Image (cartoon, rainbow, N blue to C red):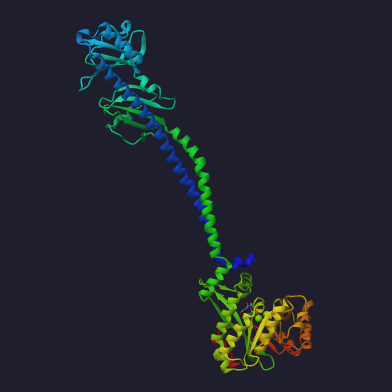
Length: 529
Ligand code: C2E
Ligand code: MG
Ligand code: MG
């Protein structure tokens, strides 16, 4: 059955390819977006790490400059001639002990330490001309080496003669790590007071001061963030190798990719579910009904004795919107399975009413075979549908022959009632495809029937030396003994026709005489036969 479905619903096939394609696309897209997102998240994380490093360094610097201002203010209460008094030096020592980054305090005369909290080291030290002179009267000496501390670069700031000695590396040392470069520089002169780790001159070449977004350097090796101090004179630079970002990406990707795939699969499942629904046999058939894709063809039934066309069998056809013709033995079972057969039957009866009204008016004795499925025989509503058809076309005695396969007579309770009602409407009833289905023949005694249709499979072997070539004759004998009229189906050769007539079969249909045709062609066919 699945094969049949696939054969019929080539659209469905296409759809499932499409659904698979969409699924793969969604999963790939979600992996791609997860990676992009992971990359973005990792960058954001590393940037905020650098920013917080910068903020810490700046805060430390701010604190130090406040301490220096405070120091100058408190020592300025000594008049210049007492700047090196015992009390003043005592205060200097006090401040140096609790001064955080301020290592030592002293008093300068002609750029030379006159006195200090560290008399043995600083007193008498000549600083020379200051490296930087700031507008507020602050003077700065950088790269000062002290005796007994070779290799260490000190910085001295002075105002009103009072000077503080600092070790700038202290400002950054605390925050640097093996993978982090950090430096403190003068924005105007690009001079680095101190730095730790690799710092490239090109990173600050374009820096104009102010807050600018973090950036990845030209060689894509480092992520760099620069922040100015509140005074706008100095800035802190922090940098990490981009390999750190990649490591973070991995961390984020491990969470985001499975999450992305999960959502993509969920979304695909929803799409496939909706598609399945949309392209289920039922919805496909329902759409075909709505779009009026079903129509009827009629295959003439011939009286072998006169070769006259005495009737026809209505056979439903389904032409899909793309022009594909679907055979009824493919879609009728699907309609039966999906419960849509009753609607199709109703539609078939409507089509018969439209197609046959005129022909039946012109030929009141014309017999019309109508196929019902077993589900139709299980519903009393079928009788009402047939009644409606009769009321529109006119009854005509024995004019309609209802065909049902043996399976229709299986559940004899309801089916028997329906068959009786059909016969009470003046219609005849035929067993279609006799001998091909239900194995028990007991229904033959329970149902009142009029016709037996000999299936094409038995007709095919008539007149051949196949072992089954005699089955048709047994069926004929049985029909005779049950008082059933016969129609043989699928006559394709003159030999078959001759043998069957000889055996007493009068009515036949088959390609030897005519294939199924449109109602217009049938009218012309009947007119000429
Ligand atoms: P069926 O009622 O036994 O219809 C006879 C089938 O044999 C038709 O096939 C017809 O075209 C085919 N046939 C007739 N003469 C020859 C011949 O000489 N050679 C060959 N090779 N075939 C011949 P079709 O139209 O494909 O219908 C197949 C089956 O579909 C029908 O078998 C019937 O069971 C079902 N069917 C058709 N129309 C309806 C309908 O309106 N309602 C229901 N429930 N079933 C229908
Ligand atoms: Mg039939
Ligand atoms: Mg048949």
